[in-house]
Image 1 (spheres, one colour):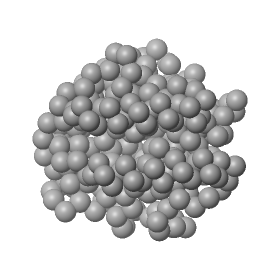
Image 2 (spheres, rainbow, N blue to C red; image 1 turned 120 degrees about the vertical axis):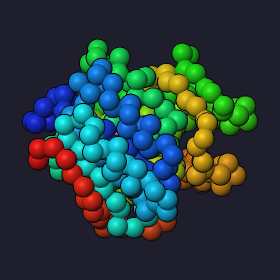
Image 3 (cartoon, rainbow, N blue to C red; image 1 turned 90 degrees about the vertical axis):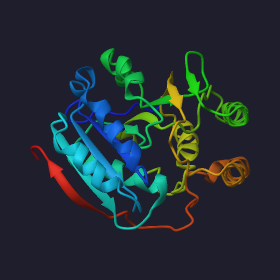
Image 4 (cartoon, rainbow, N blue to C red; image 1 turned 90 degrees about the horizontal axis):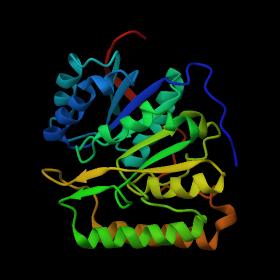
Length: 276
């Protein structure tokens, strides 16, 4: 097992990353989650990264960030549409550059609640693992408005992933996770797909590198969100991923999995608040 050394900055330095794409109606609600006293006290910064939204997402995020109680706040826009996975790579680089030790991923469409993660931060459970991953399909989780078909397919995929990595996998892609930033020190994630399947690749990468992976139950709801995932398209990508992992297990981390390989993922800081 690989143990990741703690950052020299602070073992409790936590950055919340909110990926955004056409979530104007929801982003204000997501940022309001950070106003809860039990949340604010545990996080040190928040970065909203817009992936070239075509609605008022950026404007609404800026308004919600203006008087947010989190001490350090940034609003970024990707220079191109990199996909959800690409936005993750922008956030990982940003967290590393700013000296944060942990990166919380909280999707901007308001399907998840950061409150599900707070007890684990309060108990310092995140310090005993490298990846603390939210799970929609384990004991204690709660699904609201989620179709039975999608639930069944996800559970089947979890069984397959568990068999391939030889450890329990309870979810291969929820929108609430915590990463130890130092876990990405060698850039093992750079060649993973930039689309919605990024987290699937990440699970395989974590297992291949012997990093620590822990799951926690969460609540997940579908209300006024507009999903960017199309079941048939995502299912085909999952099958391609599984085939690549089975047929080229030894070369999986070295292989290129992106449709558009990039040397970098540049973004632009639109607004920043708080001390630098």
